[in-house]
Length: 186
Image 1 (cartoon, helix red, strand yellow):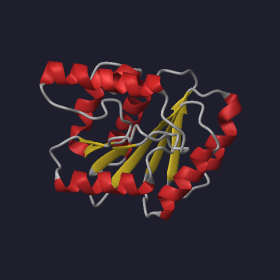
Image 2: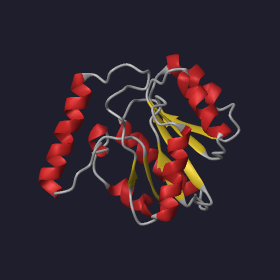
Image 3: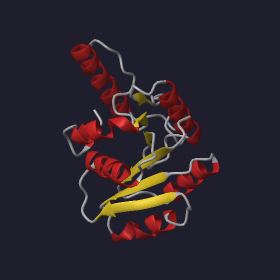
Image 4: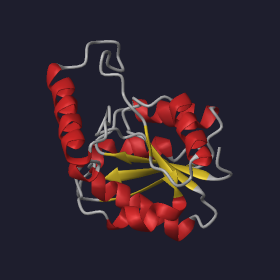
């Protein structure tokens, strides 16, 4: 795994489970977690305050919701400014759908392939809570995967995954990609 890597979690109106998730990441040995509050509002302030109790979690953000892409870029810019020794960035969603083990595997894959963008692929047969994945979610991912294949002649099993890893040398490029909402992920 890279010597120093940051886990970036964009968060809009997160559930209390985000606190547990960050705790699990910490228990697995992750020592740099950055959570971006994407204008969640005052009613979520307690969640973000609890996150600050984790010794390796930093919380930054802004008042008004700007979208997931904007939150990711805000986090990338913060990492470039404040963490000069960061060697890799792993992004994860705030709902805990990416296990700490998957985050660690992604970090290891970045170390092995530092010139690649590593994408996690969700299992669309079962949701995180054990229920069936809604048909619209499966259809949406299948559709975007098919369009991606038609355009680029490459198969991606999950075009909208929030679990991604890449070398920190790509942070300037990641900040230049257009988009501020979910279109940024695609």
